[in-house]
Image 1 (cartoon, one colour):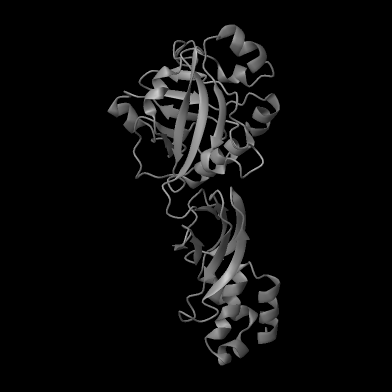
Image 2 (tube, one colour; image 1 turned 135 degrees about the vertical axis):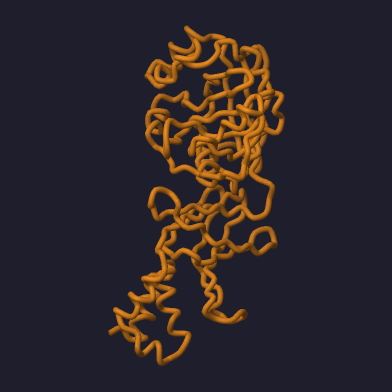
Length: 339
């Protein structure tokens, strides 16, 4: 039989575990309940709740977020109403929490209080979920300097990442941008009125390491594809790694509607200056077997960028560099005026 003192000790030892916090906070309902709690009783209470793990990711460029667990067993204004869960640093900082389906959390950002209840697990029986903490802003801006018109000129792609559309996809993309993964990457699949695909890293070591590092799908059936929308490409459920596609301008509506039929195709961003996509060289057509463009498997080889692409596909356009606009000068990756 667990005494009140033992429960208090468990709560202090594992303060970031909302499973134990929930158990310990049963004591606030009445002292009689606290005295009567036993291991079997606790098990019955918790059996009614579905346990889950949640990764909270702070995508604000500057602000450290104090994440609080909202305890609905006590009144508003009570010191125990909001319990400190974690301090999460900006620019992709993360906190992993053991909690239950239906538990609510809160945080303050830019003078606003936000409440979030993690969605229940939906991915193949896995108990993990991902929650992006980004406040009420319109999104995260990414700028990519690129070559255009078969490397005869340069331009920029302005990409607005919408973290709430597809949290896992948005987090992975921003993580890769911060690491410099897309710098020097070829637009290896460009088909007019269809898509532009890229994302096989220019660094052999990086692309090899990331090739099998897949993430779970984000399924959001409320977002319909449009020209300029950005999604990860994949080869089956939960196969997203680094390869991404843009929907081309003038893509027919029936093709736009076809995008998203696969579970791994979910928009997480869109290109704001979509007309720039038409400047990216598309003369090689689709990849084999549908066209005579570059074979992705050959690009993954050690000589993919040193020999295969420049010798066989010299007109391809490339990304020079991608940055997260509001993080310039804040992180270790780049500084003011360097882009």
